[in-house]
Length: 295
Image (cartoon, rainbow, N blue to C red; front, side, top):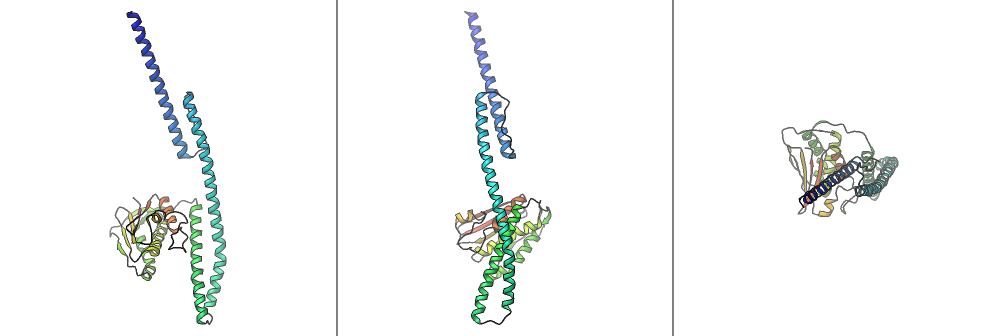
């Protein structure tokens, strides 16, 4: 009887050990699958998940994940192809429009030098305004297509955020004055230095200021913090929270900006992220705040 008890305990112990070993192997297999999946999603390679354990359940799991990976890669390729085609089309269209627009502007310059009646002068002024708007939109489209298509690295160097922000504000002095906007500016005397592309940073500031001129109801506050964060804040009662959340979407425009391509803030976001920064928009009680951070 005692011998049977010992045998039972040995068998039970062996069973428990077998189960524990199986669970450890299963745990290792699942971890292996998880690590492989994470790597494939991060590197986007064409290889599939392969595991060293021969357990049928884990092999089935890996097989199903591989099936989803194939489908995901197929959809990603279609998306990338479509995006490349869109970028190429925008580049070609904007480029093709520049030549006739330049010719139109040249003939307008000549016409404006000729004697005109009051009625003809009004018509020419409208044509000039709309032609300038079309040229501006075309240039914005072309710049966006170049930024998205280029694989060139940005020229990263130490830049003074203080100086570039002041230069951008000075460039918008006329537009702000025309709108009756006197900006409240807070820039520290101490230099705020970050390793960035100066031209890209200037483009970011210009696009955000251009947006502020369009949407502000008469105020603008610009602040540069010592930690490298820059905020642009203005009243924008014509916006809604939903519209504010989509301001960085490509080609998105709100009702009050029909002459816009909807690319200005999209370009700002793209360039900011290329330089390792973040850009966000918050809308609260009719007040829009855009914050850029290069920490």
